[in-house]
Length: 100
Image 1 (cartoon, rainbow, N blue to C red):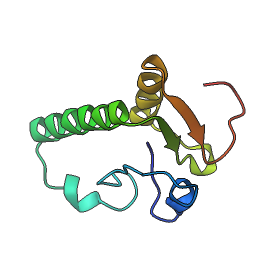
Image 2 (image 1 turned 120 degrees about the vertical axis):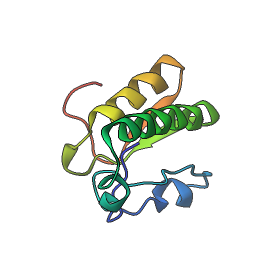
Image 3 (image 1 turned 90 degrees about the horizontal axis):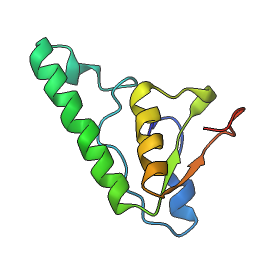
């Protein structure tokens, strides 16, 4: 679930849904979280966050991908695959040129 702080995450909320969001914007605004971590800590932290995101998907009925400009990183792609494998619906902010 790639989230950009510029894009309103309120769309699903305004549709009457409870939204479980991310806590960090790893590539877009939370650089200070990562900049002083050694490689081992960084790897463990990323693994922990990946697992947490999958637990959030477990609690959800669907995921809403914020894919501004078509961007989706490898973690987001992994989360989309996980959501589909567990029978969750996947919606996108911007339409996809190809089927995920």
